[in-house]
Image 1 (cartoon, rainbow, N blue to C red):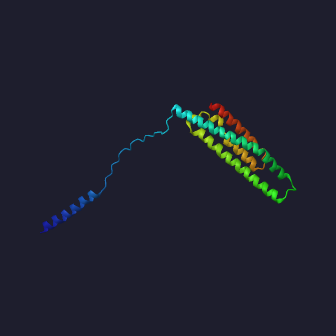
Image 2 (cartoon, helix red, strand yellow):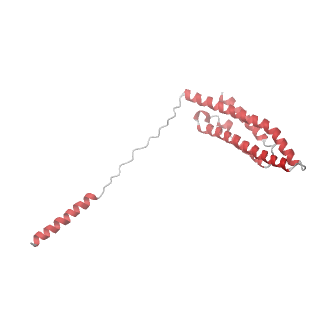
Image 3 (cartoon, rainbow, N blue to C red):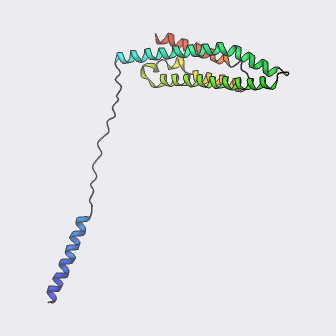
Length: 176
């Protein structure tokens, strides 16, 4: 009887030992397959020509935007600075002048955003990268214009924008 009890206890212990091993998870590390990075952009001559043409069109649009802005800025800046100097101006005129200042500064910021987008495009698109040296710095120049406007020098704010037009024009020539 003692032998059967002993065998029974050993059988139960053996059963639990086997069951515990069966539940243990074994993980084997497999070497990771090397990742292959593929590019969806195919650099065909036709695609490069299309990127160059699109880049030239965007540069042309910015030339138009900046020159129109400079033209309008001249008269607006003169009026703003004259009203700032006029000690006899009434409160309504001064409030309108402050509104004009904010609008001019916002317009310069909007112009700067468009120029920054264009400059980034020249940094990221392969066919345009070789012309980056020509266009590089237009965002900084528009930032100088914004700084001048923020300091109340609205007449001087157009001068860096003239340099932007020069850089954009040089870029158009280089793209042809």
